[in-house]
Length: 181
Image (cartoon, rainbow, N blue to C red):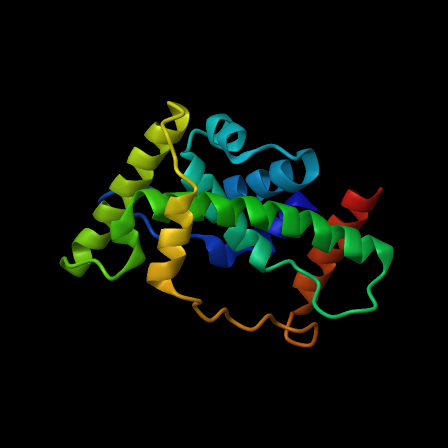
């Protein structure tokens, strides 16, 4: 199953840049399995794989978006799978909410050259991870302030089963069986 996931999630592979090397798809798949299968939190995943907590959240979230079962009248196995993904996604959204709440520059377009955007976002993530690791004060009202500034942004429509290719369905079914048993 691991090898199949790596092949089918190859679209998650990013290019090497001057600022960083991308997280390999093999690592993303391993992080996904640790999060969903073992229930590790993102700090544990980041420590285990040598990356930051925010990066772990982002990469696992990208992979999970490719896996969710749409629709209703699902089998108990598929419902359990969606529940597990939902719990993980909530943690990701909470982490990003805290990131945006703490570093307000991420709430709007950055007033800098495009080639500096990665530097700004990476710096905010690093400083955020430092604050989280040191258990710095975080006021929950910062989340509300961030929501007020960004409004209720539209979310993309979820794909239905007809849009997913056969390989994605095979992977999703294998993961659902693994988690249900």
